[in-house]
Image (cartoon, rainbow, N blue to C red):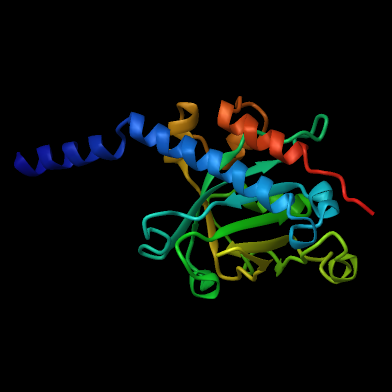
Length: 228
């Protein structure tokens, strides 16, 4: 009887509705993702080439975790993915994701590292819709070029499904994330949207973005024009 009660209690905990704290933390992380992306895209020659964003099918932003929680049990980050909607090529509501494994933690170091990934084609975007996507194993990922005048570097990377960058302690550079796994974060999706949606269910355009989600979409839509 005790074992049964213990199992039922544990099950109830696993499927408990998100708390106010869960909602607040997910919203704060989404707001931070908007800030990170805006800062990186405003960095000019030290940022992501704007033409790559214009070509991208999806964008993944993982803001650095605070309080030393960056590398815990192999999980090193929580972030968001937003993809182009079929109609009008606008950006979808952001879906929460977990980023785990790989050796990226040792490559970029620190507990306040920001990661940005651009998915450059429809095939790569479709792969990200599954329950698990391992970079380098199921799709090509390359360190992204830096700066608006990086066309020569960019040409060599056009075959990559994904391009990735990191920013740590003010240093921004392309980074390889091979071996890293991306998974849907249904708990954070439920905290944001009221249901434990999958990535595909959020980015297919049927979920309305929250205020924090609209801020990220606005950041993606208001990238400053390159000055020549």
